[in-house]
Structures are given as C-alpha cells and as structure tokens.
Image (cartoon, rainbow, N blue to C red; front, side):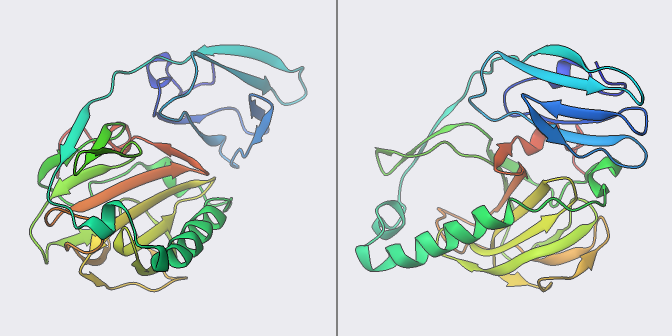
Length: 251
C-alpha cells in the first residue's frame, strides 16, 4: 500500500492521509485522486462504506497496480435526545425553501478541490471539553429516528473560544437553520472541517487561517439541546470521523 498509509486506517468513517513518491498517480475505485508535489494525498471512507475498496497506484514511469483494501466495519451507538423544539425535528413547511437552499450550498462547497495540502500537517482540537456526541451514532430525536450523527460534539459553555483545526481558507461563515452559526474551512484536496452552533463568528469567507487561529465563540444556535461545538470533517461529499484525525488527547 502507499508509503505512509496503514491498514489500520482503512475503516468505515476514516480519513486516510498518506504520502507516495512524487509523480505517482492514484485512483480510488476508479476516481482519480489529487497527489501533491511532495506526494501527499487524502481519501475518505464513509460511515456505511462496504468491506472493500480498490486503490490503483501508478508509479512514475510505471504500470498501474491495483491494491484491494479491506475496509473494517464499525459498530455504531444509538443516541436518544429529548427536549428539542418541534420545528427543529420536523421543520415547518415555510422553512423548507431555506433548508434546501442551505443544503445545496453546502453540497456545492464540498466539491472544492484546492491544491494546497494543509491537511498533511495534521489537525488540532478546535475546543476541549466533554465529548457529548460521536460520529456515526443513530439519532433518535424526541422519539423519532433521524439521520446518523456525522460529527463530533464537544460540550463547552457558550462563549468558549474556538480555533481552526488546521490551516486553510474560509469557505462559509454564516447562520444556517439546523447548525446555527457555522464556519466551513477548506484544508485542500477535498478535506474540509465544519464548526456549528457558534454564538459569534470572527472570520469571513475567503479568509486564510493558520492552524489554531481563533474563528469565533461556541454557542447554542440551531438544533441543540444545550451549548456545544459540533465539529464535522469531510472528504468531498463523504463525511468522515473527526476523532480519527485528531490527536488522541485534547489540548
């Protein structure tokens, strides 16, 4: 397999960051991957990815080599949340145009494929606190089954400073129906992070940020039962588990 990727990285929900010889071409299940000038690359496996993927590696001046990757299956928690406002569980009809517009904008942003591999330097925790929600859990909201939770929740008081998990460019900074005050950062090669439920945004779209730079304050905006940071990570349209990309200990 490519140089710095490990078999243990290949699991449902994982972001895989690796390095190959410069000039190598890569494709995942037939989809060409961007490879940086230093050989950096990234790919992701979704929550419900099947048991196998095929990575095609073409060394400089060489022939394509197909590598079958076993993608480990994970077990997911069930999380039951009560006390949410009814309009946040079953939105009223008059809000649907806004919700669809915001969903479409996020989908368009997730096609961003910028060339600067900021992700390769690794990630830092955007906030420190009790983990109140994990990636992949099946959500039961006010007794009704809803889509799985595709992020990591850090319980912090309103007004806690939040920081960029890695260097990158601000793609979005605005209030959204479900996620309230929301910031999306582009870290290159399709890797993005999202920060939700913020009470104050201190960055603007187009800003270039350093890793650890303050982006605003935590809050309880959007669909919440209490103040926290919802921190999500994507590889293009594939939502991956932020916990696997963050340091093992907060700090």
